[in-house]
Length: 429
Image 1 (cartoon, rainbow, N blue to C red):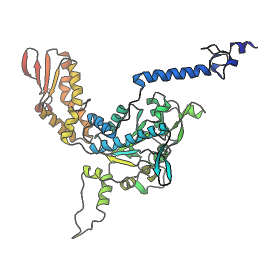
Image 2: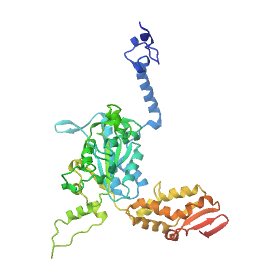
Image 3: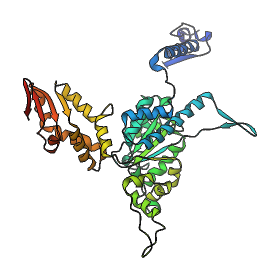
């Protein structure tokens, strides 16, 4: 017997090669080795530890009403969108339970029939700054699943400068810490989805649209579900080109959410609604819709006319919308969510032992100013920062300040807040 055969033993239990079914090398021909008995035992030990560790146990799948209740704590308004997303996400993870059971059957007149459940990818549309990304992030946070946000404007057709669609999968795998099994049940959120529309709408042809229709075509294979080789490392195309360093990932169970403002679609909707309106005397008035009415009446036909290809729209069957936030809802965005903007600023000032206060009239004026911005709720933070700018620089180094009260006047004229100092009841700023 050679010296190598004598040393070919399991490094855990000491069994020799001829005493086990398999002896697996750790990389070198000379070892270290592990036998099939120890592999089985290690697997059982890990399973027992995971079952006993509360942090590794999966929580029961939440019902749609429970998902929406969680979203209500983080997202103000948008009841319709939250309801539709809650249903779609619940049904998506219901499919996972079905696959774990092996198969789903129903009784029919012809006997028992096996049913395959298909996923429902989502198109989420609406004005900028109304909560599209926030809804998706809140869902991912609640379910504790891999979630990757991609910017559609960075995607290009394969072979051109920019990110290939495979970079979406790379980002999802990275968010799953390299766990392919978890990544294959994650969510990919494609922001600025409307920017993938054909440049001249439905009838565009005669040129290569590498950032529009070209990307839509490339996305089809991801949406429909297929096994795709994904290079390891974000944007690492050179490794894959060399013939190695790639993971195979199945996109069948990845939920895709495409979100965008679809700016300009109101003209398409109005044209469709007024299609039967005659011109001239007795022809009737043409309907003029505001943003809320436009987004609530968008159909798949309008999205196709906007420039999305039929194959892509057909693979994203759930169409839902977010609407412009009202002034009252903007005030609630400022104050109610767990990570509300006012709460964040109050916490920062509290670290300096300063009680930051906002009058109701001040909050109302802040909301009014934000509503005039085209960025919607995103403008709230910039408005509040502008109001607080006279105090953000000096207040941290002024140990006499005990409270700062933001009044309506302080919003109109920054620097006019009421400041309470140590030993003094009130003083003008």
